[in-house]
Image (cartoon, rainbow, N blue to C red; front, side, top):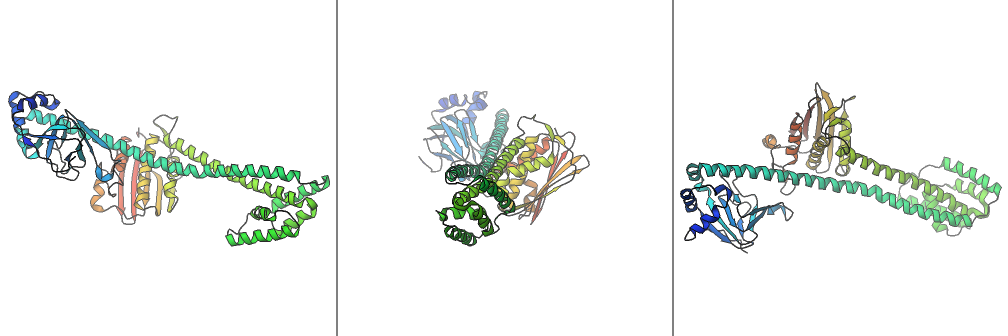
Length: 474
């Protein structure tokens, strides 16, 4: 394996063999013997071993490579081993092509197997175009195909990367309420076991049961949530209750005290309870405290499962599952669904301001694609603010258009690059942080809906303004 600069050699005695192999390459197949001889006269022959570098990322793009034998693999090594891999095999033409605007290689190419190829340097392109116009046209066709395939692949990877980020965020959002629900279910099992034990340790009379039921309902109605969340105050309250329990000769007072303190039972509640329950005080306090705990657990379970249900509903609405590709879209709901989906990225330091005009009409649009637009714009805004700042989401009607503004108070987009932000592969993010396709995807979707997108940006205020026609959006 070698990383030394690649050096070719002129075509020699193996000219006929190379000519035969070159005719198997589609772009060169129809050349006359004379033209093929001229092409070989301008070529440099390379023979490399598997693992050898053929061109390196960042180096000047100065040569075209026709692969006659073997295989080449290339990737953008600056972004790590997860970078997309491009493969070229015998019969392919790679490297720089005539009329390409590439100045430096954006990827590093290595031979996967022993490779035989012909190299043509850019200094010979003008003569090639002049003397071989048919070949030049075929090479230009290859260039067009390569740009289209590369763009399609990059866009697919952009979508997969966005989906991965979205999935990770949703998994985190779902994990919290599901974990809380599981903890509550476990606590509920403990409560049931505690109730079974307490029921065997009580010997109240029928009259005491009636009185105690009335007293429990009075206490339950009067109870207020504990206001002191301070740990020291909570411990102090537990110690006070424990001392009261020990004074009334209640066994395992240290176990029961935290339960009663959590329920926020006050001294007067305990005294009134003791006056009725008599010798069954310990068992009845355990039972009553456990029932109050079960009430709290039921509320926690309700909140947790409601959050899970809301997220699943948001996912379904976001993707427009079970609906036609185009349908009437409630713009406010579309934006709110996206904010719910993106909550994992907003909740730790970004304040969202909503400004929705009343009675917004629905519009016919591609719902799931419209949500992609909001997702990319909100995601970019969050990144621009580094997770701390103010996000504006505004929706209104202007004549025959629905207008959505997504704004942030980040550092802004430099004026000199604002005209390029919708170009494919252009990004202001650091290397490895963005592919430069997010805003390109946004631009293409909005254009597909016959809409417009503009940006206004100064330091401290950036706003993307999307206009979608009420009619003719699909």
